[in-house]
Image (cartoon, rainbow, N blue to C red; front, top):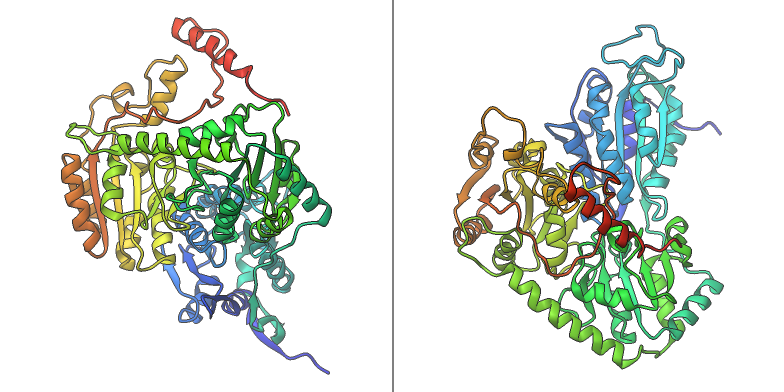
Length: 616
């Protein structure tokens, strides 16, 4: 029997294929691709641009103002959707493509699905070198898109139209795989985009994707249950995998049934509602005193869905109990086995439920839960004090966080990424709903914040989405204020202006360095401009106001909450103030020799802290 085919260009086939990929969300069948972000150029406007126009009602195309930013918005969308739905991004060749490399790294580190479709050079090579083409003197197959290889889970270059069939099959497998999930890059040679091919009709058959939930191996489960049953002081470290697996309720059941305190990483925060009796808050370098006190004494750490990066482990000096063991409950074996952990490779929800069943009615000793209760009470008091209102001319980040929390409440979706704010938010923000705390702190990418807020707003229409961003990140990438205004989304942006890179200035000084090149006043300049962030935001289409105090900030936020469109509120803050309560040491190498005494003193303290690091 002759196979039925349809003649399409490669780009048309790609666009049609994307419209046929579905998922069940809240009982409804919806497209798995929430849309395509596009900035067109000579590498994609004729081929893919024409193809996307043909499916514009089924697969919306969004126009952005910066390629990196549009990819950040797509990443945030996927994160807010807990990896169930995602987006694609297309650019021209050259700088349009390489602008997306940073965003690809963000998706790669955070294990988030993102389909990147950069235009590429001519496969036939006849017009070489074309505008913006990178030429390698020793490798004729190389193009700028090869920069994506180390930051892609799957990379391919489409040099013939029929190659699209296996490439898209592999792409979808990676984008939907809970263990291998990450960015996929398909370099689309611009001549091939326009070439026609007789594609099998079966290639465009509708497919409904489901979420795979692997169960744990029986022997691994038995060992984990034995270790947990023997532990006297166990804790759970909840990472982003808990949220991606939508395992928050399973985590709460486990903690409640067995009396195990739960602490959260940056990616895992909001996995537990802050008022749950076993929710100890953040852990590690930016951790609460409650979590870090328990972590230091713990004899067993059940690490669920976490990469155990250095901010979580205090550069591997936090877990001080010499007899401690780690159980790595993770869907990715690479993460499950870190630091000589007993591996429990499984979906977080299924793994927690089966581990709970394996230990039955076992509960940890009452003295340990009593310790956790007391530690949480102490931290709650310290946290409230850090967020209390103030009449100071320049409030701290914590005091601004308190104002935002009082106005928007714990069910708002807070978005942030880099600088000092992630540390303060990790300690102080009290989320009530899974995903209510949306921080990009895997790659800690300055500039993610505003674009990320746009992505969250598209993913969660109707929710209060609040971006908190410092002046440094705002200046680095603010163009998607215009995109958000153009798209009519509801988004509140709080700009904290401490006149420089306050976080790194504090780190510089804490390692003995002089204040240098971080705050504007310490940088080389002929004049210090008074940057009017509110006026700038208004110029991009937002409504904006400048608050002169915490009281004025709350009033402005009340107006922003009830208004539509993009609302920006600016407030000057103290670049030196930080929440002293909680926290833990972080390994930042101090120079071994220096002409400055303060550096030498800092080196001595650094060497003492190094002695606390574990080698295993």
